[in-house]
Length: 135
Image (cartoon, rainbow, N blue to C red; front, side):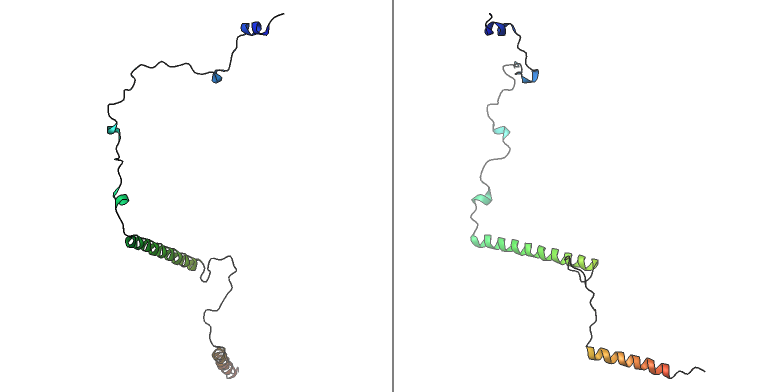
């Protein structure tokens, strides 16, 4: 009988090329020597900025925040005003909600005056018609 180790020693073990480790690349001894100083490679000086080290008073910070809040409120009001103008151009009286537009009268007059005017106009018309005679 054969021992399994003897059989395995005679079998060529082939793996997929993508599963094998790549061969080692021989590099020259001095491919890119480092300079004596790396300060030339730093463009930005890593120091504290003025706004970090300065002592801004709380009043100045509060004033800055108030100016920013006022600016944001003005921008918000301007956007709302522009949106309202756009909606008024699209459909006057529509506020942009998903509701059905209901027709309303533009000129509401007092009912007594309106009725009196209607009666006057109908009386004038009816009087004019009655006075006409057809021969």
